[in-house]
Length: 55
Image (cartoon, rainbow, N blue to C red; front, side, top):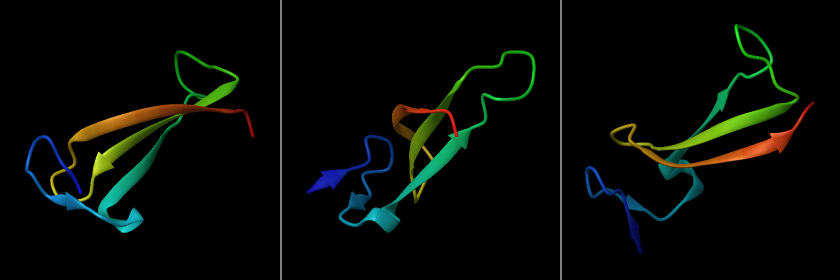
């Protein structure tokens, strides 16, 4: 079983984490890729990240 390093909540299902799109196509810095942050569904602590191609 996986647990959050901050609040020790169990992460057994996809609903236990939150996928946040870090919008990289607007603002001061723009990129052709999209950046994602995976956060704990209980406390919001960042537990991972990723990059995907442009949409």
